[in-house]
Amino acid sequence: MNKTIKISIIATLIVYALGLLYLYYSNENYEQEFALYDVNKNGVIDKEEITLESQNITAQGEKRKTIKQGAVVLIPFSLFIGAFTFGITFLFRKIKTINDNEIIKSKSKRL
Image (cartoon, rainbow, N blue to C red; front, top):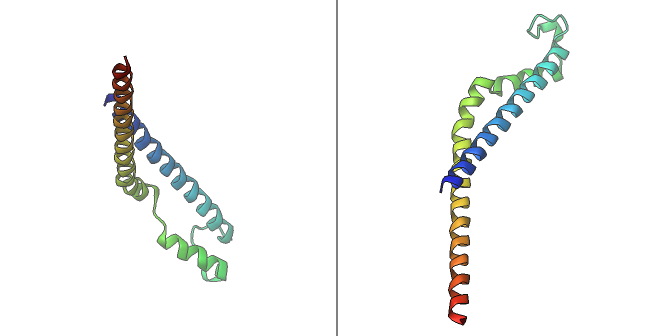
């Protein structure tokens, strides 16, 4: 049981870390695209800078989650994955124990 808990905690941390890494990379990529369309580098796309592509980027920016929001949203998801991993590991260990006991009993009946 102790090993099962360790496996589920490690799976939870891996999912959370990978999610944060993806969020960070995605936000960096978005900021680079935004900077590409922000010609005068003032942090805002002005009327002179508006194109179809810049409108798409700003619309995408309105829907995006920040890293802080994403970190909070990832917590329940990673806990769910950890619980699922715990269940699967626990069941596989039970199956292995049952199989090992059956093999031992079948060998003792033969003797």
